[in-house]
Amino acid sequence: MHIGGAAGAMLLGTIPALVWILIGLQAMDLLTGMLSAGISGEMASRVAWRGIGKKVMALLLLVSAGLIGIALEGLTGFPAVGLVQAVAGFYAAHEGVSILENAVRAGLPVPEVLRGALARLGPEDARG
Image (cartoon, rainbow, N blue to C red; front, side):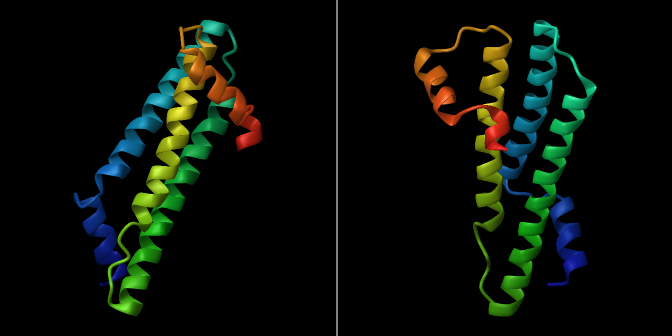
């Protein structure tokens, strides 16, 4: 399949559900991040741009995985099922953790078991 045709097909609606979930979680993370920063009085455009940049990078890696999948399919004749979903799933999980961190920063009640899990993961900067 031609790469241009594949990119066009991706844009026209053959995007896997997990990719849409990732995009939705990214939007929620941006919103919860801004809300928690506003609530805690820590609004900083530099921090916001850093977060946006990371989300754009994750989407670019996702597109790269799609292109690699297309190339592998062309070389082997077998569909590279799961490559895009694996990348999207990884970043979707990361967004979920970040949304939970935003809730904690905003002062929302969060079950102790989840707070403990966040503590074991360490500070966000240490995780990347």
